[in-house]
Length: 244
View 1 (cartoon, helix red, strand yellow):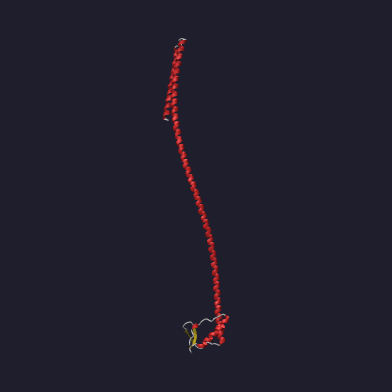
View 2 (spheres, rainbow, N blue to C red; view 1 turned 30 degrees about the vertical axis):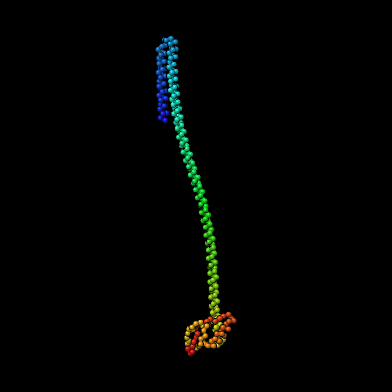
């Protein structure tokens, strides 16, 4: 740019110098014509021809100078154009490289986003499966709890029923025992009594003080209760009168 400005300034100075020369030449020509009006036509013609020759020479010099300047300017413009084109081409290549890098980065980001979406979809499916399994397990657990509660209630009712049956059976046994005693005419001893523990199991022992009479009583009691499906309970203590 400095070279161009310098060339333009030189061109302007050259044009100004040519303009001054032309002006001075015109003034000189007018003075010559005025001073030599009395000259003959031939002398005037010669002077006029000489003026035009000088003007032609000056025009040729100006044209050659302008042509040189124009060529120099063209060379400078071509150099600048080439440099500018090189700079533009380099900037364009850099821009293209940046765009390619950006495109590659976007492609990688899209791939990562796609993988992330797939992982999120897998996690969502796993969560749904776990929720479904949890719902099934909860439903099964509730069903098991209900069954256990129902079984517990049924067992409790069975226990209550068996307790009632046992109480009823005990009452029946006591009633039958009382009835047998009344039938056999057995009476309780009069007076104070005391209880003595009997060693061993009563059904396996045959104490000396009972003898045959006790065995007959037990056999008759068992034979009387067997048709009813009831057996007498073993007694570990016996009532003994103080009179014995």
